[in-house]
Length: 160
Image (cartoon, rainbow, N blue to C red; front, top):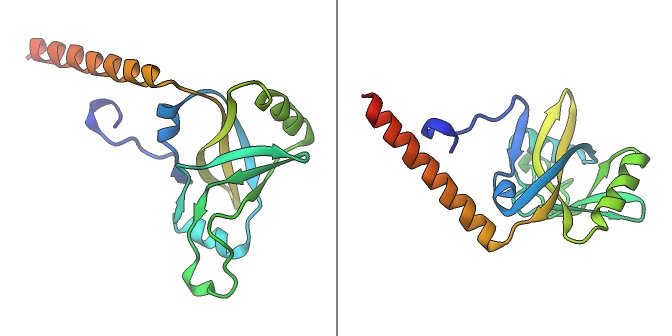
């Protein structure tokens, strides 16, 4: 939940967001990439039937592939549907792919999808170059968040 107990609003055009990514990883850098999709997948994406929490991307043979993203089959296109969790090719410039290859070869860095959205007619994915958090980092973060909430509550009570 965002500040004030309200749910965070999605950006216009957002289809799916990976809110767990910020909890599981230190997000270092964000990159926008196009997604190569089939027709029924685009329809399903527009309907919001996608799950990216367990998704990840890898650079293989000079191409970037998105894995673990579940795009539900589109009902009316029963015969043309593809497997829901198939790897999908991401569309990036050669220079960007080479830079990502160099960065992901560093120990502990991975590519994680943080959101899928439409930019005009094009489906895009926002990838984050991320380093996994250790359990103690997560606990410390939760403790700090709780402490901030307590301080805000105390200040709000004093103002009344």
